[in-house]
Amino acid sequence: MDMGVALVQAYLRVHGYLTVSEYPILETMRHGEHRIATDIDILAVRFPHACQLVPQQGRNDEGDVDLETPDEALGLDAEHVDMIIGEVKVGAAELNRAATDPAVLRATLMRFGCCERHETARVVEALLRDGHTFNPAGHRVRLVAFGSVPPERSHPRYRVVLLRDVLGFLRRFLRTHWDVLHHADFKDPAFSFLMMLEKAGAIGQV
Image (tube, rainbow, N blue to C red; front, side, top):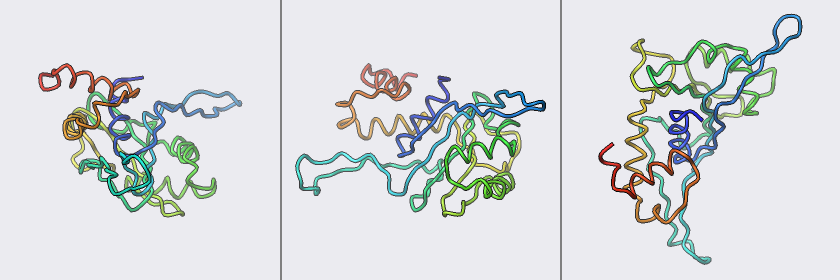
Protein backbone atom coordinates (compact mmCIF):
# COMPACT_ATOMS: atom_id res chain seq x y z
CA MET A 1 0.00 0.00 0.00
CA ASP A 2 1.16 3.53 -0.78
CA MET A 3 2.39 5.11 2.46
CA GLY A 4 0.39 8.28 1.91
CA VAL A 5 -2.76 6.17 1.61
CA ALA A 6 -1.76 4.19 4.70
CA LEU A 7 -1.33 7.42 6.68
CA VAL A 8 -4.74 8.73 5.61
CA GLN A 9 -6.33 5.37 6.34
CA ALA A 10 -4.97 5.43 9.91
CA TYR A 11 -6.25 9.00 10.32
CA LEU A 12 -9.75 8.06 9.20
CA ARG A 13 -9.84 4.90 11.30
CA VAL A 14 -8.95 6.89 14.41
CA HIS A 15 -12.03 9.00 13.63
CA GLY A 16 -14.23 5.90 13.52
CA TYR A 17 -14.40 5.35 9.76
CA LEU A 18 -14.50 1.93 8.13
CA THR A 19 -12.20 2.03 5.12
CA VAL A 20 -11.44 0.38 1.79
CA SER A 21 -8.13 1.41 0.22
CA GLU A 22 -6.90 1.42 -3.37
CA TYR A 23 -10.20 0.14 -4.73
CA PRO A 24 -10.04 -0.65 -8.50
CA ILE A 25 -12.83 0.60 -10.76
CA LEU A 26 -13.41 -1.49 -13.89
CA GLU A 27 -15.11 -0.04 -16.96
CA THR A 28 -16.49 -1.45 -20.19
CA MET A 29 -14.93 -0.16 -23.38
CA ARG A 30 -16.24 -0.31 -26.90
CA HIS A 31 -16.45 -3.78 -28.46
CA GLY A 32 -17.10 -5.27 -25.00
CA GLU A 33 -13.53 -5.09 -23.71
CA HIS A 34 -12.76 -4.11 -20.12
CA ARG A 35 -10.02 -2.19 -18.34
CA ILE A 36 -9.24 -0.60 -14.97
CA ALA A 37 -10.35 3.02 -15.19
CA THR A 38 -8.65 4.04 -11.94
CA ASP A 39 -8.02 3.10 -8.33
CA ILE A 40 -9.93 5.05 -5.70
CA ASP A 41 -7.31 5.74 -3.04
CA ILE A 42 -9.63 5.64 -0.06
CA LEU A 43 -13.30 4.93 0.55
CA ALA A 44 -14.54 5.53 4.07
CA VAL A 45 -17.84 5.45 5.91
CA ARG A 46 -18.56 6.53 9.47
CA PHE A 47 -21.75 6.01 11.43
CA PRO A 48 -22.97 8.71 13.85
CA HIS A 49 -21.45 8.66 17.34
CA ALA A 50 -18.66 6.23 16.37
CA CYS A 51 -15.73 6.43 18.79
CA GLN A 52 -12.93 4.36 20.24
CA LEU A 53 -14.40 3.21 23.53
CA VAL A 54 -12.19 1.84 26.31
CA PRO A 55 -14.70 0.06 28.54
CA GLN A 56 -14.35 -0.55 32.24
CA GLN A 57 -14.24 -4.24 33.03
CA GLY A 58 -17.56 -5.64 34.18
CA ARG A 59 -21.19 -4.58 33.76
CA ASN A 60 -20.90 -1.05 35.13
CA ASP A 61 -20.33 1.44 32.29
CA GLU A 62 -19.65 4.49 34.47
CA GLY A 63 -15.91 4.04 34.02
CA ASP A 64 -16.05 3.70 30.23
CA VAL A 65 -13.87 6.25 28.42
CA ASP A 66 -13.91 7.23 24.75
CA LEU A 67 -10.80 8.48 23.00
CA GLU A 68 -12.63 10.69 20.54
CA THR A 69 -10.72 13.89 19.75
CA PRO A 70 -12.00 14.86 16.26
CA ASP A 71 -9.80 16.92 13.98
CA GLU A 72 -11.50 20.10 12.72
CA ALA A 73 -9.61 19.80 9.42
CA LEU A 74 -11.71 16.77 8.50
CA GLY A 75 -15.04 18.59 8.86
CA LEU A 76 -16.65 15.72 10.74
CA ASP A 77 -20.45 15.73 10.99
CA ALA A 78 -21.27 13.59 14.02
CA GLU A 79 -25.01 13.55 13.33
CA HIS A 80 -25.03 11.87 9.89
CA VAL A 81 -23.60 8.81 8.25
CA ASP A 82 -20.54 10.22 6.45
CA MET A 83 -19.14 8.71 3.27
CA ILE A 84 -15.80 9.90 1.88
CA ILE A 85 -14.40 9.35 -1.61
CA GLY A 86 -10.78 10.31 -1.11
CA GLU A 87 -7.76 11.02 -3.28
CA VAL A 88 -4.26 10.98 -1.73
CA LYS A 89 -1.43 12.90 -3.39
CA VAL A 90 2.19 13.40 -2.37
CA GLY A 91 2.01 16.77 -4.13
CA ALA A 92 -0.97 19.12 -4.43
CA ALA A 93 -4.23 18.02 -2.79
CA GLU A 94 -6.22 17.67 -6.00
CA LEU A 95 -8.64 15.18 -7.49
CA ASN A 96 -7.39 13.57 -10.68
CA ARG A 97 -9.53 13.43 -13.81
CA ALA A 98 -10.60 9.82 -13.25
CA ALA A 99 -11.80 10.58 -9.72
CA THR A 100 -14.24 13.13 -11.15
CA ASP A 101 -15.42 10.89 -13.99
CA PRO A 102 -19.20 10.37 -13.60
CA ALA A 103 -18.88 6.69 -14.51
CA VAL A 104 -16.21 6.15 -11.85
CA LEU A 105 -18.31 7.94 -9.25
CA ARG A 106 -21.38 5.88 -10.13
CA ALA A 107 -19.40 2.69 -9.55
CA THR A 108 -17.98 4.07 -6.30
CA LEU A 109 -21.42 4.97 -4.95
CA MET A 110 -22.67 1.48 -5.74
CA ARG A 111 -19.65 0.04 -3.88
CA PHE A 112 -20.90 1.93 -0.81
CA GLY A 113 -24.40 0.60 -1.45
CA CYS A 114 -25.72 4.02 -0.49
CA CYS A 115 -28.07 4.50 -3.43
CA GLU A 116 -30.26 2.55 -5.78
CA ARG A 117 -28.81 2.50 -9.29
CA HIS A 118 -31.38 4.90 -10.72
CA GLU A 119 -30.47 7.46 -8.03
CA THR A 120 -26.72 7.56 -8.59
CA ALA A 121 -26.78 10.04 -11.49
CA ARG A 122 -28.40 12.74 -9.35
CA VAL A 123 -25.96 12.17 -6.48
CA VAL A 124 -22.98 12.25 -8.85
CA GLU A 125 -24.19 15.49 -10.42
CA ALA A 126 -24.37 17.15 -6.99
CA LEU A 127 -20.95 15.79 -6.00
CA LEU A 128 -19.32 17.22 -9.12
CA ARG A 129 -21.07 20.56 -8.65
CA ASP A 130 -20.59 21.07 -4.90
CA GLY A 131 -18.11 18.43 -3.70
CA HIS A 132 -20.66 17.09 -1.22
CA THR A 133 -24.30 16.07 -1.08
CA PHE A 134 -26.81 13.89 0.74
CA ASN A 135 -28.18 10.68 -0.69
CA PRO A 136 -31.91 9.84 -0.53
CA ALA A 137 -31.39 8.12 2.85
CA GLY A 138 -29.91 11.31 4.35
CA HIS A 139 -26.29 10.10 4.38
CA ARG A 140 -23.63 12.66 3.58
CA VAL A 141 -21.36 11.84 0.63
CA ARG A 142 -18.32 14.00 -0.12
CA LEU A 143 -15.11 14.28 -2.08
CA VAL A 144 -11.93 14.85 -0.07
CA ALA A 145 -8.41 15.44 -1.42
CA PHE A 146 -5.41 14.78 0.83
CA GLY A 147 -2.03 16.16 -0.19
CA SER A 148 1.22 17.80 0.85
CA VAL A 149 0.36 21.29 -0.39
CA PRO A 150 -2.90 23.14 -1.16
CA PRO A 151 -4.34 22.80 -4.67
CA GLU A 152 -3.59 25.38 -7.33
CA ARG A 153 -7.21 26.50 -7.40
CA SER A 154 -7.96 28.75 -4.43
CA HIS A 155 -11.52 27.51 -3.93
CA PRO A 156 -11.81 23.87 -4.98
CA ARG A 157 -15.22 22.21 -5.00
CA TYR A 158 -14.16 19.55 -2.51
CA ARG A 159 -12.65 19.40 0.95
CA VAL A 160 -8.86 19.63 1.26
CA VAL A 161 -6.89 18.06 4.11
CA LEU A 162 -3.11 18.47 4.15
CA LEU A 163 -0.91 15.52 5.05
CA ARG A 164 1.01 17.60 7.60
CA ASP A 165 -2.28 18.08 9.46
CA VAL A 166 -2.99 14.35 9.23
CA LEU A 167 0.42 13.51 10.69
CA GLY A 168 0.17 16.25 13.33
CA PHE A 169 -3.22 14.99 14.46
CA LEU A 170 -2.02 11.37 14.76
CA ARG A 171 0.99 12.47 16.81
CA ARG A 172 -1.20 14.51 19.17
CA PHE A 173 -3.68 11.66 19.45
CA LEU A 174 -0.93 9.24 20.41
CA ARG A 175 0.56 11.55 23.00
CA THR A 176 -2.79 12.55 24.51
CA HIS A 177 -3.86 8.94 25.00
CA TRP A 178 -0.45 7.31 25.36
CA ASP A 179 -1.21 5.91 28.83
CA VAL A 180 -3.94 3.79 27.21
CA LEU A 181 -2.65 3.21 23.68
CA HIS A 182 0.83 1.96 24.53
CA HIS A 183 -0.73 -1.26 25.85
CA ALA A 184 -2.18 -2.14 22.43
CA ASP A 185 -0.59 -3.99 19.52
CA PHE A 186 -1.94 -2.22 16.42
CA LYS A 187 -1.77 -3.94 13.02
CA ASP A 188 -2.48 -0.82 10.96
CA PRO A 189 0.86 -0.22 9.15
CA ALA A 190 1.04 3.58 9.48
CA PHE A 191 -0.31 3.75 13.01
CA SER A 192 1.96 0.96 14.24
CA PHE A 193 4.95 2.75 12.69
CA LEU A 194 4.08 5.96 14.56
CA MET A 195 3.65 3.89 17.74
CA MET A 196 7.14 2.48 17.23
CA LEU A 197 8.58 5.98 16.81
CA GLU A 198 6.86 7.14 19.98
CA LYS A 199 8.16 4.15 21.94
CA ALA A 200 11.65 4.84 20.59
CA GLY A 201 11.41 8.48 21.63
CA ALA A 202 12.04 9.58 18.07
CA ILE A 203 8.68 10.99 17.05
CA GLY A 204 9.57 14.56 17.98
CA GLN A 205 12.71 14.39 15.82
CA VAL A 206 11.09 13.40 12.49
